[in-house]
Each structure stands twice: as C-alpha cells, then as structure tokens.
Length: 233
Length: 53
Image (cartoon, rainbow over all chains, first blue to last red; front, side, top):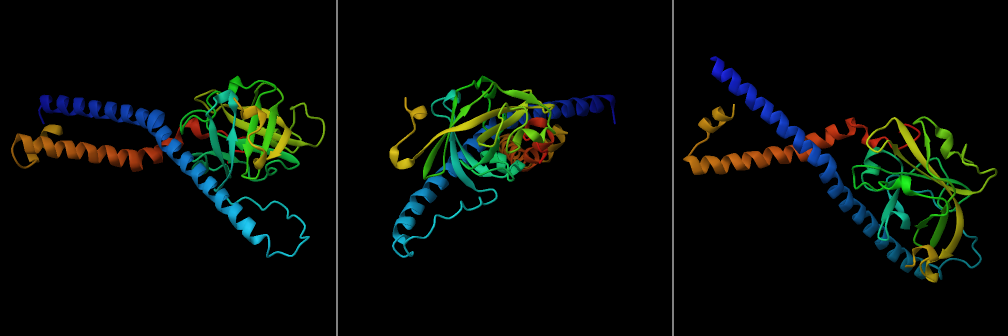
C-alpha cells in the first residue's frame, strides 16, 4: 500500500467520523425533540380519547349499578400508560405534557414520569414526577425559573388539581431519595399533606446533581366547572 | 475507501451518483433508527430521577 493510499484512507476515515459526530449531535439536539413532541401529542390524544369514551361509558353504566355503591378507591395507574396532563404556565401558556406511570427511560421519552411508589394525583402523600430537562422535547428546560406561588396544574379527566410551588428549585444529589418521601425531607413541609415533587437533572446537560421543586395542593375543581383560574389568560 | 465504492458501483457517472445518494440515505436511516437510539442512553441526559431507576 503506497503512502498516498494510506493518507487518503486516513483522511476519509476522519471525515467519516466527523460526519458521524455531527449527525449524532443533530439526532440528540433535534431529532429526539421531534420524536418526543410527536409521542407526547399522541399520548395526550390517547388520553383525551380515553376520557371522552370513559365519560360516555360511565354515564351509560351508572344506571346498571345498584344505587348507593360507595365511591371506589382510585384505581392504580397502568405502568407506562398516560393518566394525566400537566400544565405549568411559567413554562409558557401552551406548555402541556402527558404524565405517564413509571420513570423508566422509555417512559420518559413519551412524557413526564410518575414515580411508581409515590402517591396518586391529588391524594395524601407526595405525587412525584420526573422529566427531561434537555433532549426529548426539553420538557423541563425552564425548571430553574419556577418561583414560590407558581401554579402547577394537572387534570386526570375528571378533576383539575392546582398545586402551588413553595420554594425555589432545590439542588441535591442523585441518591437523595428523601425528596420524594410522603413528607419530603428539607422541603419545609412539617406534616402530612397533599404534595407534589418535580425532579429533573442538574446541571442542564449533566447528571451530577438533581433539581427539585416542591408544591402543595391548593385547589381542586371538577372539569365541568371549566379551567382553573391559573390557566385562564 | 470511497473511491473503492465508487469504482465498484455499476453504470455511468449519473447512475453511480444516484446509487451513492441512496446509499447515504440508507446509512443515515440506519443510524437514526437503530444506532443512535442505542447510543443516546449512554449519555447523561437521561438521569432525571432521584432513585436511580
């Protein structure tokens, strides 16, 4: 093999590796967002379709059940399936993301993830949700902008839940599991209640720390009563 | 490497250019569909939970 062929092959290899890296950056920064936005939209569509059908079937089935049946405990969420939509006006008026059960990598590609062992939406305890800060649609990109008093609104198709942020984002270590306890450690909450915890990564593109926001349930209203105050323009 | 591929493609220059373009798109498709989704979780952007799941 002549020197010329060697140099040429080496140059071609360098160009190939460079093109690969550029393509990978495009994939991470742009394509994951396209895919995630599409996936999140279809999750929300699925949820709304389910709610629309659910209301019909609940209305039709109500007559068949014996009167005076006590209201059932909320059914456990299905793993990997959406069950609520979250709105955070601070992240933009049109910001809304589906909340899915579980915090696995595949789940977080399709929306926000609910920690499986934490309380259900609106129930006593700590409803905890994790989301990407960067890549996959950047759902929690503006996480550090959250301030005390900011509303975090969720709906499960029958009820609007308005949580209020209690303090500025709190930075902690990845193993600090106490932040999603029923009464989260270091949150300033001093007794049992209906809390919400959001977690994402910190720094923005790293994984050395986590950023935490705590909120408490401020108000609930049935969906028939219209959008809560926090979502009205 | 690329010269070798070019020499082994059939047809005249136009046909070769067309086949090259198709090959490039096929490679990009395989990368975006299979290789990058496998490689991406190895980066730190997925660590957003506090319980290490």
